[in-house]
Length: 383
Image (cartoon, rainbow, N blue to C red; front, side, top):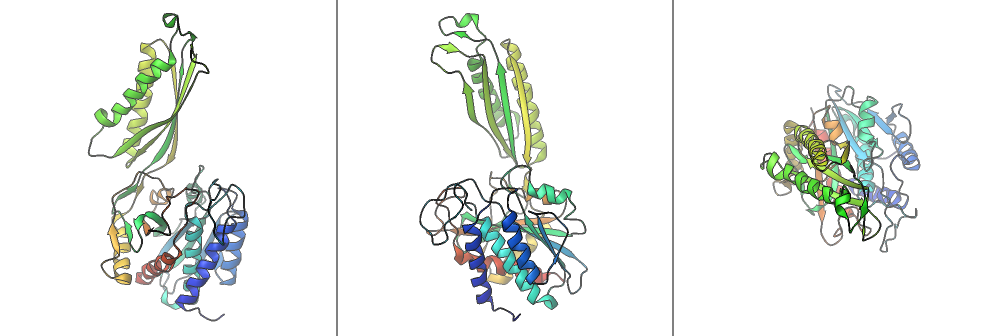
């Protein structure tokens, strides 16, 4: 097989990205996607490690092999019906790559091909992580860690094509970059009755209003204002008609923060507040707290390595140090176990003007070669 020029490699990446976009698969259902990737890696003579589909893990021996780095791409799509007109429109009804994972897979396949064709220039061993289920629990990243995919790895890197960052920029935060994402459900059991005789009831709707106010005070009064965190209640279910006080209220919400300690404290306070207020009004309260994605905290040594690679590849005007965001990413699970860094590749502009998870979301394919270029530079800088 002849070595591709970078322009030919870019064309292949765009072709692969459009294939992935047309055939999206939901979390833990990425079997055809995984088969496509396994076939491509086999054609590149890249060793496939023994992981069950839809996981795909490739391994490449480095010229020196004194270090091992892992590179990750997520594979799953979203339950979003794609809108608009594209020549590569999703062919799977109700499912679309509305977040950019199609681009992530194509980029990593392109990098894998470059490595395969330039093995003498690659000093470290390379682990290629094609990961299922970034969008939903259970986390595909946590699952790969549990299966031992990071055993023997010295550092792990990933990227996200990012609509919220200006096209042409590549950036990250040196430290906390993305927040945790936990869920909670509060159930208040009171005693219903007619709206004309509220004194004969234990009104769970009235009680829920106190809990909502008190939970928001965790952010404003119980925690350090210099630490960013968010508690949002997004669902309240209670009653069926205007003049009957119901027996039960159920509230659901999310907690976002940049440290595991803060997340743990918020959970404790939600439980205390619910129990205390319900006891005050003679109701019963129950909290179900579901731990989700941990905060994504880049390791400074590795994030600075990424910054140097970007500057070496593009000069001083491309890298941007970013403000942390409250969105979540399960790449954080890798960073709990190994040093590493997560990077945003900016594509904000006319082509990619709709936000992630929007039905008209699309990536700007013109940023794909730069995404490959910085990752290749990162690999070449390992000695």
